[in-house]
Length: 106
Image 1 (cartoon, rainbow, N blue to C red):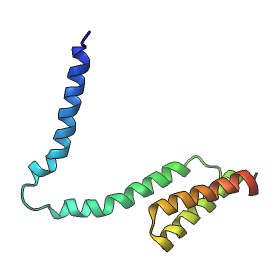
Image 2 (spheres, rainbow, N blue to C red; image 1 turned 90 degrees about the vertical axis):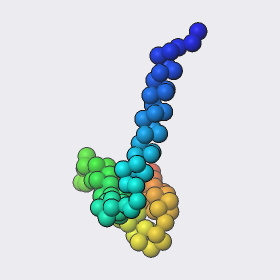
Image 3 (cartoon, rainbow, N blue to C red; image 1 turned 30 degrees about the vertical axis):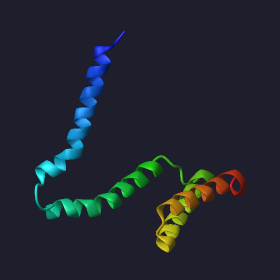
Image 4 (tube, rainbow, N blue to C red; image 1 turned 60 degrees about the vertical axis):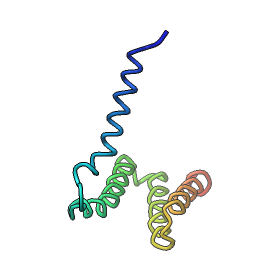
């Protein structure tokens, strides 16, 4: 049995997705405005700052977990400043956090 409801939903999702993908080319026909270029440069840092604050907002820094989070966060910052590799920073911070939580600060 064919479900028209599911077909229409998938069709609508496809049209919306394609519309979002093509919208910048329709809106900005020739040259990309300076404010869009500025937002493209600033947003990644702003989003990372928001994610960082959101991820540590409920941590109790008087416990061992708080110390592990703080040390792992500092290690992520230092690794990224040193190597400029996002994947290395994320993996390094995760490994340091897990080592701290499971062995040193257990």
